[in-house]
Each structure stands twice: as structure tokens, then as C-alpha cells.
Amino acid sequence: MKVKAAQVVFVNGLGLEGWMDRFFKASGSTAPMIVASTGVKPIEGAEDGHDTHTGHGGEHAEHRLDSHAWQNVANVKLYVANIRDALIQADPGGKQTYDGNAARYLSTLDSLDAEVRTAIAKIPVDRRRIITTHDALGYFAAAYGIQVIAPQGVSTEAEASAQDVARIIRQIRAEKIPAVFIENISDDRLMQRIAKETGARIGDKIYSDALSEPDGPAGTYVDMIRNNVRAFSAALMG
Ligand SMILES: [Zn+2]
Image (cartoon, rainbow, N blue to C red; front, side, top):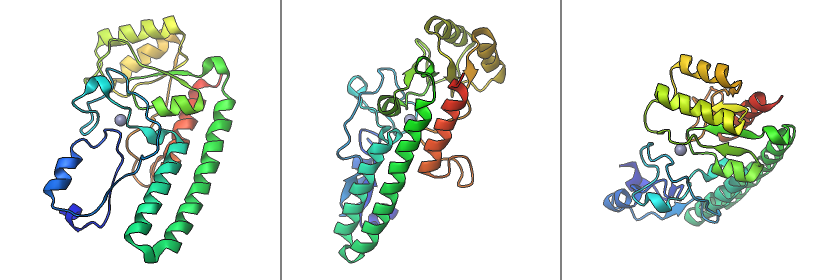
């Protein structure tokens, strides 16, 4: 197993890799396991959030933390510092390289954070509201001031039914939500129905858990954040 040969093992933490502890012990590895999110101020996940992705959530659904801390760029600066320090610990000879690379990337992240704030500031305050079935944007919402609303009574686990769609339509109307980013409706006719009956815009694809293909719209972390902010802006600007 690759884990056995690794000198340092990084995990996100915040409940994302509940399976990892046992797996790591079973591998016989003596490498330090570094929790990259150390120092992040955790926020709670929604009660009916998504334990649908393998490895997400856990047995203690009622106290589950939101593991998507990387959706706040400032949190990723903590990840970078933790990773840098762990690499230096494991390989002191490489300190200069790790310090230099980390400093460069931290400065990129500072620019990215400022870019996000500038983009969101251009969206009228009363339009900074989206609805999404994937409860992955809690940290983004808290950091950048977009309200992310979960559809009530709609399962995030299965393909949304026509009944779910009717419920989502009622909610969008009642709460005057200007844009929808819904990932578990693959039937385009249902999406079109939501748009038609509510006037809400259907947002472009956002990336929350994984990157796109390397040459896709979200091939790196920085591009993922940029892609998402572009999608929010496009859907929310008047
Ligand atoms: Zn997720």
C-alpha cells in the first residue's frame, strides 16, 4: 500500500476521513498523520447534510461538523502552513524549498481571497442568496456573505422527484431566491421547469468536493474558487 511507504500522511480532518484512522493503523505505517485543517474554526453541517458522498459525514450525524473548510480561502492558508511545517519536520533539509513554495502560494491565496471579496461586493446585497442541494458551501457563505439555502424536505441522496421539484419551486418563490445551483437534478426538463416557474436563474456547474479534470474549469484549487465565484456572479448579477 502506498500509505505504508509514505513518510507523512495528510488528511483534511473535520470528519471527512472517518474511515482513515482504522485504515491507517491497519497499514502498519509509522508516519505522522497530519490533519491539514488544524486551526480551522469548525462550523456545523446541516442536520440533513450529505452523508451521501463516501467518506463524508459519519455515524454521529447530529453533531457532524462541516468538513468543507477549503471553501473559505483563509482556511486554506492554514492548510498550507500546516503542510509546510509537517514537510519541514519530516525533511529538514528541504526547509528552504518548502518555505519558499509555501510563501508563494500563501501570497496567491491572499490575492484570491481579495478577488472573491471584490466579486461578491459587486453583487447587490439582496441578491446574494442561492439555493443548493449540496450542503458544501457553509464556510464560503460565512466568509464571503452569501446566503446558501438548503431545499426543505428534499433528499440529497437520490435524484430529485417531480414532487421535490414542486417543493423547491414553492420555496424559491416564497424566499425570493434569485439563483439555483442544484446538483442532483440531472433531468434538464425539471431544471427548465424551475427556471420557468420561478424566474430564478440556473447557475453553471460549481465544484465543491473535487476538482475538474486538469484542463477543465476547476483544474486547481485556485481555479475551482474562481469558477464558483464566476458562476455565482453570473447568476446573481441583475
Ligand atoms: Zn461534499
